Figure 1 (tube, helix red, strand yellow):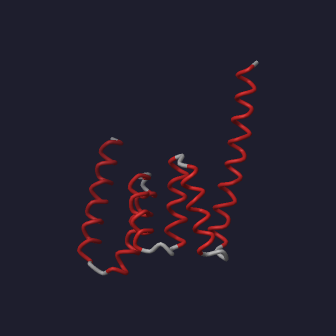
Figure 2: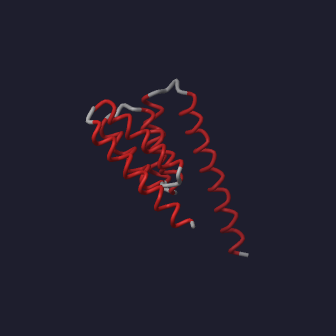
Figure 3: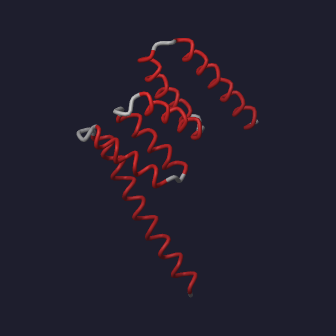
Length: 127
């Protein structure tokens, strides 16, 4: 049943992509990449979300939202160096955005927590 659900979601993504391509408007195309990435992320299709948000960043490098969303996807995939870079870029582009700042702060807290967990595991292995 899960395989069928994933196939249906993939087909839906393809149809949506086709519609966006046919729309032809550059400005809406930029926005559509972000929206398509959100749809992909909501359906746990993180590789597709990354692809779409990378496109959005290429089309509009000054989009704090695109950088933030890309950071979230990288973090979800465990690509922490890339995530940190994108979070930092997003904050530089929109330093007053409390949502983006909170994402970066939470990311850094999670990194510290993971480092502490890794240190504890190493100590336990030595015993």
